[in-house]
Picture 1: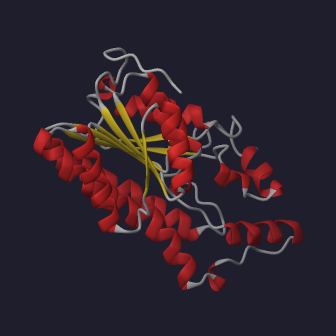
Picture 2 (picture 1 turned 60 degrees about the horizontal axis):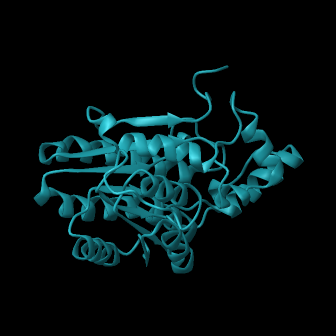
Length: 267
């Protein structure tokens, strides 16, 4: 279990909620927040067992939540505030990809044929990606703002994707969902700063998470070679996210921080 030292660190005395915290980037963020002084880190994930395992590790509390379910998200935030008395930091990392689309990309890469995902993209696959990635972000943002507005402070960080800018051929639904996350977060940021709430977004390139592990090896190799730096670690993304959530970013509002290994700035 991570030992917390009250009153020490950038997040001394604060209460945090991390969605998607059972693995990957979210788990790394939960560990960093606890190590930097949070008095309570609430870890939420669709996989309740993973959430509770990470929560136990950091001395926090684990919860199950499906971010597609607005009522469940509202209930989670209400439970957090009731248990801890406040909510200072929310980091929303929950998201999904589409393994079937990745397989189609690989098949096209191996055959030399053009990628052909859109024509076969079902409504169900579209809705799954958009409902988790975009609707889920809306649900978390709304619930967090409702909780933070009465206290006149708070920091929220959402996770978008560099794929919203440098779109991967054959991944239209994912790119669209993450572009929506960026626009939604920036619009909310402009609105809620009047209540002392800062909203920012980190837009990763490829990150070595369990989600990335489902990417076919040949596709992964091509993505890794697309930037000056290969796959980022969850801990590197946690550094970026915790900066945006910290007092050190007090003047950063509505930013989309590219954490993509130089994919847009290095040829």
